[in-house]
Every structure is written in C-alpha cells, then in structure tokens.
Image 1 (cartoon, helix red, strand yellow):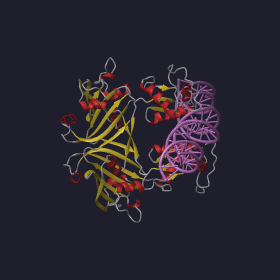
Image 2 (spheres, each protein chain N blue to C red; image 1 turned 135 degrees about the horizontal axis):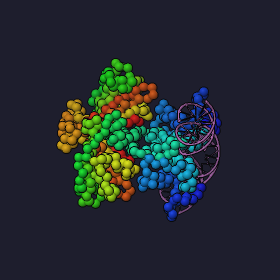
Image 3 (cartoon, rainbow over the protein chains, first blue to last red; image 1 turned 135 degrees about the vertical axis):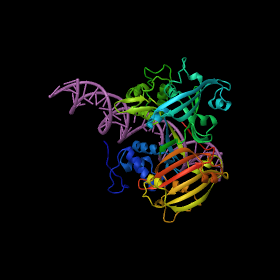
Image 4 (cartoon, protein in one colour; image 1 turned 90 degrees about the vertical axis):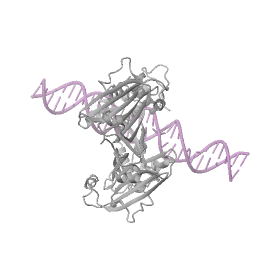
Length: 245
Length: 245
DNA sequence: GAAGTTATTATGTCTGCACATAATAGCCCC
DNA sequence: GGGGCTATTATGTGCAGACATAATAACTTC
C-alpha cells in the first residue's frame, strides 16, 4: 500500500513478513487468538498500540477489529477495551433465497401450483402476532412448489390485502413468494426453523406418509407501517439448510 | 457530528431533518429502496454524489452502503456502480450458542450425562468428510443434555484425538461441547440443519416414540491444520432456531 | 467511609485527502 | 467491422487528525 511505514514493531517476531491491509491484520489477530497468545476473556492491546505495532493507522486496526467483533470473536466496549469473547457464540449466516432460485441452484426445474386462494379471517394468534386487529380478513394462499416435477415445498401463506395494488397480481402466474420479494421486498421480519410431523394436508400434498419429519420454515414480515405476510414452508424430506462459519 | 455541513442537497424533501451519521444514511438509502424511489435492479447515485447530497464525506457514505451490501440489499462492483439487489437474498444471522448457555438462556437448569466414550474407527464417509485417513481411530462420544431434568438434546460426536492435550479432559465433568469451545475454539466449520425421524437410539434416549420428527444440527469443525470434530445434535421436539432479519 | 463529581481512556465515528483496483467505455489500427 | 490497447470511472482501501461517547478510575466533599 502507499504510506506503508514498514515499521515492524519491536514486539513482532523477527523476520516476519510485513502486515499490510486490514484483512491481514484481522487474520493476524485471529491467529493470535487461535494459538492462545490471547486466550478467551483476555484483554488485547488497544487499537493505538496495535496500530503502532503493525505500522498502520488506527482506522485500519479499527476496521479489522470491528470485523472480528461482528463475527462474535471479540467483544468491544468503550473505555473497557477489546477482549476475546469468552464463549464464542458462533454466528452463522443463513441465506434465504427465493424458492425458484433455490430450486434452480440445484439444477432442477421449478414449477408451482396455486392450490387455493381465499379471503379468510386468520386464527387469532396469527393476527395478533402480525399486529392486525382480530377479525380482519386476509388472503390465504396455498401453493405447492415442485423441483423437476416432484414436490419440493408446501407454502401456506397469509397475506395482508392492504399491501396489494388495486389490480391484484395473479398468484397462479407469479408465485406469491416471488411477487412479494420483488414488489414489496426489503421489509423486516423474523424466521424460525423447526422440525414437525407432517399433518394430513401436508402429507397429501407432498406425497409422504402422515407423521413424516418435515423441515419447517416460518416467517413473518412487516414494514414499519403494516404487517405484510406470514408464511409456513413445509419442505419435502431431505431438505437441509446449510452454512459455513 | 462535527463538520456537519448541514447542506441538505437540492433533491432532499424540503423541511426534512438533517441526515447525520452513517446509520442515518443507511436508513435513508434503505427507505428510498423500500418506497421504490430506487427499485430493484436500479443503479443508485455514486458515493460521491450521495456524499454531496447528504453533506458528508464519501467515506461515510461508503460505510453506509457497505453495510447494506453486506446485508444483501445492494450489489456493488467497481466502476459498474451500486445497484439495488434484484432478488434480495435475505441473509439471516443464526446464533449457535454453547448448549449450556442455550438452556440457561431459557431459565432452565442444564445438566448432561456422558453416555459413552470409546475409541473407534469412524464410518468412511465421515472420515473423508473430515479429511482424515480412513481407518484412523477417533473418539466417539455420546452425551445427553438435559434442561430442567428433561431430555433436551442428544449429542453424538466424533473427535480427533490429536487435538486433545496429553492429559485428556474428563468429558463426564465438562461437556465436550463446552470444552471444545473454550479450549480449541475459533475454528472454521460448516453447519447444516435438517429434520429427521428419530432412530431407535435417539428415541430411547430422548424419551420419544421412534419416528418422531427431530430437529437435527450437524456440524463439522476444523483448523487449517487438522479436523477437530463432527457432531450431530438431535433436539427434543419443540426445538426451534429463531432469528430476525 | 459513602456519595457525587471530574478526569481519563478506549472505542466510535467523521473529515479530507490520496492512491489502488477493477471494469467499463472509447479509441485506434488493421 | 473486429480485436486489442488505453482512458475513465466508481468503488476499495489507506492515512492523519479530530471530536464524540461511554465507562471506568480518581478525586472531592460531606
């Protein structure tokens, strides 16, 4: 890099290659944590001290340490300093793609069938979870997604009609899953994964015996103004959510 | 903040309160995306232009846009510019705590029982997955974790004996889960979630009927040097992994 | 000695400025 | 017109310095 002072501070191992770039600093700090130079719970040197040691600006050290803190490896508090996390609560990123994308990413062909679309009053716990007045009607959609013609996931969705435009989209042509993502998208929400035994309807639609273990994803989404949707996705057997740490 | 020029560019809504701080900029950009000022796929103004509009330094805009890109809302490429992600692949952070912590976070008492500890040769697919030579012996541990005395999760673990110190820890006193996190920690790994029917052993240990839908977490961890462990956690019914987006 | 006030300190963020890098757009030459 | 080189441009990263903020430590005062 430019200003690279090349000063390889007194404390560095002699002969060690110069450390440059915030990613290199992050790697070096992580290495010291891994080899227990800095064991869990330990207070590590201040940004300023590290900047001197690595011969870079404090901002660069800050960038590196911030990244490690976001990953849950470090805990930082003003004045108190930076310490190695005691119990490294691993944070894993899970990607939640659109179902079509997910199927196509496996090299399979995606289709879907709209099984039902009705206006109905949702169960009370659901309405309250979404913050809607009890008794308000929503749109209830039931969709089956197929991968290479075989059942992939059963989508049971409740949708706030308020978010739809005057001319409602045709959910038999564009899946609600995808329409929402592209037309409402960027809302906040929560997601829960669980394992549940297939109910009668799910078993029938997915073509599995009742009681089969299904991977279930439940998601609520809302904007600051209003609730958008609640969806329950019951995946066909064999489904896995994978991620790297 | 300090240099706050308070210039509220020509394009801002009249009377709007001053935008300050990178988080405010992130919020404002996200708002414009949500209200479709900048629809999906759209190229948004350059950092420089936004810096002028918001009356701040380019670095501050950069910070805000980078955060949104990390969240998957924006896609950035040098020279090409910054555009709103077409299909917002939502990325959710899942926290993977130590089991004891997880139980205690529910306000329950954590105990565990080491059901078995043997040296054995792991199945070939497992050895190859961990990158170990087939035929090499590992330590096979079976542990049941309890929450308030009731089965919580069944832990089936294969452990590379090479990572243990000369005097092996007593896994009946400290759970392998926790020992690894505090003594080996900060390794890389992958995680998979799935739903599976309880096998005979799991059913017996967890006290549920065979075939019950169980939430299963499988995790491999390794350091750059060697494989550490593979673990399969079969959770008692009712377990959920939850996260916010 | 307890309680409240002030000083200190490490991180958090911002400003300008600069150079690095990647990818596109334009140009030239054949 | 096609292929390859060059210029341009937006983001990526860096530096030095400054102020902001939170939390601890030190010091008063009663």
